[in-house]
Amino acid sequence: MRAEGRVRAPARAGVMALLAAGLSLLTAQAQEPAASADRGARILADGCGRCHSLAPTGASPLPAAPPFRDVYDRFAPLDLRAMLRQGMVSRHREMPQMQMSDEESDAVMAFLYALAAGR
Image 1 (cartoon, helix red, strand yellow):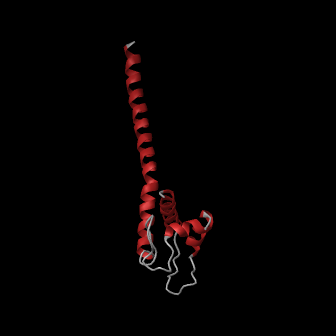
Image 2: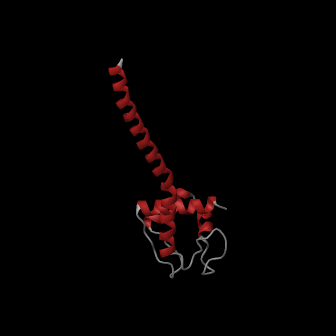
Image 3: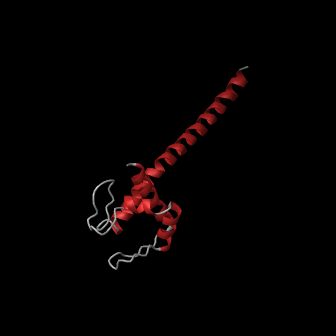
């Protein structure tokens, strides 16, 4: 009987360690979208914020530049993501062409989704 109890205690410890690791992983994954959206906001603020509004309300600093909440509404998400990766081309000479990595475009899309969902 005593040997059986000794075997179970280490087994319980192993199960508890696995559960703790799983919980830690789930917590990190739950925080990932917010961190990605924050990174997307920084990318857009650095490259686009002087002309485009990044806020859920209000006008853009440059009146001709649509707020990003409107840009997100103008395109299907997969099309917008592809345009970010390929380099968005504008009819305006003042707008710089930006080509983003997969990770950057995913972060920008996470921000734009959060911006649109927050209305």
